[in-house]
Structures are given as C-alpha cells and as structure tokens.
Image (cartoon, rainbow, N blue to C red; front, side, top):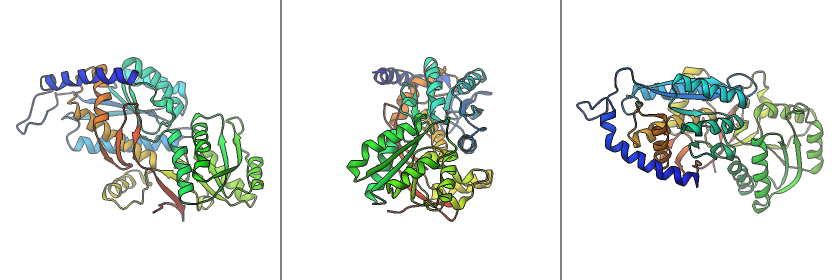
Length: 393
C-alpha cells in the first residue's frame, strides 16, 4: 500500500517537474542541453564499512562510487549538473550508520547510495523515509532493507539468493547431499538459509546436515564441520561473510575434509582478505551477478579502470555500486530533476522514475519493481589459481 501511494504521488510530482524543469534549471545551452547554475551541484552520499571486519565491502563500494562519479562528471554530470560525493564509515554498525546518515544530511545530501550492509541499511532506511530521501542500497540484501517506499536495491535479496543457489546446485547437478553452515544470529545469513532450505527438495537436494553458529561463537567451527562430514555431505553451503568463511576453509583443510564449498555474494571479497592463503579457496564456488573476467566490453573497461586506479580486481559489491550510481543518473534524467529541488521532491520523483528505466549494467540488464527489488539474472564463479573465473553453462 505504501508503494502504491508513493507511486501515485511520484507521478504527480514527475509531471509537475517536467512542466517546470527548464525554469528551475540554469537554462539551456545552444544544443538544447541543460546547463548548471553556478555553484550548484548534486550531493550524493554513501555509507558503509571502510574499517572493521566488513571493510572489504565498504571500500569496494566507495571506490566504485568515486570511479562512476568521475566518469559521469567528465561526461557532463546529471542533467548538466556535476556530482559531489561523500562516503561515511559505519563500521558495519547500525547505530553508527544512522549517525553517518545524519552527518551527511548536515552536509546537504540529496540522495543516498547506501548503505552497504543489511542491518545498518534497515536502520538508515527507517530514518531516510521520514525525510523522503531517495535511498538506493548497492548491496543490502535483507528484505526489510526495501520495506520503506523510498528505498530500492541493486543486489538480489536474501530469499532470492537462497532460491537461486538451490536452483543452480540442483540444475547443474553439483551434488545431492547438502550440508549447511550458517550464522543464526545474522539476518543476512538466516534469510538465505531459510530460502535455501525451502527450495532444496524441489531442486532434488537432500539436506543431510544443518549446522549453525552465532556472532558470539564464530571462530571455532570444528564441531559443526565434523557433524557435516559425518553426515556424508558432498557440498557445503556457506551463506555468510568471507571473514568467517576463511576460518571455515582453514579448519576444514586441517581436518582433511574437502567437499565442494558454495557461497553467496557475502563470500565475494575473500581473495582480498589480508593474510588469507588463497590456495584454501581453490574450487570455492559462489553465486554472483558479476564476474570480473567476463569478456564483454563494459566489464573489461570497468575492470581495467578499477585496477589501474585502486590496484586490485573489483568484486561484486563494486559492480553493484557502479551500476547503482548510473541508475541514479538515468532515473534523475528520466524525471528531469535538478539539485535546486527539495529532497522530498527529488525522492518522490525518483521512486517513480527508477521503475521506468532499464539499466544495461555490469551486473546484467536491470529493471526495478515498485516494491524496490531488482530483476536480473545471477551468474556463478569458481576460484581457480587464486582468481575468480566465470562458469559457463
């Protein structure tokens, strides 16, 4: 109902903007394009962890947002207005993320490309909806991330990841006896786990072990791994973040247990973890909408630019953010917006406009539903020789 009301309001706002857009902008150049008023810029914020255990994700998102904005500004900005960005560290902490949101509001933020992780995203969305601030999370995947009418997502939701993982494992006949290890205290991990379990049987999968851990006990997995090995599991599904996964892979090797390991987007980043022995990840598979070794021109150009600038291979979170920045550009141009408008006017118009664009992004062809979720196809990658490689059907 909230989305329906928001959509109706957005249509009205968008029509109004289309009628008065030229008078609010800085006028038109000789070629008919909008020109920016002197000193007027878009201010687009970002929030995510750049320190702490999830820093790989936040740094990747910050880097990609910078890269996309540099390209957008070089090409003339958004509707002729240049873009300024500021990215605040939340350390993957919900309270700190809300503090970051308030700081960015004081800075003058007009739209938010964030937050990076789910729990902080939910809390920030509950604040941003009060301001009618348009929020696009690149990688927050819990369903509640997009519960509010102002918040949309670039990445798959947790239930989508669980469902797609079960489908992929079953359709590619990777294994039939499945063991699961998940973090029952984490909304991301639990959400994927529950959807995977729900979809396992219909895809010909038998769950022979279902083990868990919590945030208070996430360093020693030997008992859980022993139980999974004793169950005869051929594949172990790991729907959690790379920091804990690195420990699981090490402890599994130490006990001589070597099943197929399969993860989701939270696994992406394990090769960038400081001090991690990449050989432990040999053969590790994960579901992702982005593969850095894809041969299409768009991906190759992005990867080359990212590597040159930041000296590392971009992961999915970077690709999601890059796509998110261009989605903001396309939607704002679709609605003929300019930065002299209020946050509320921008937000309402963006809620409608983003459902009307089709982005040809790094993570596939993306459209957005009115409920805030994206529609696109996943891909799978496997780690070989210390690098991600796409898996061709």
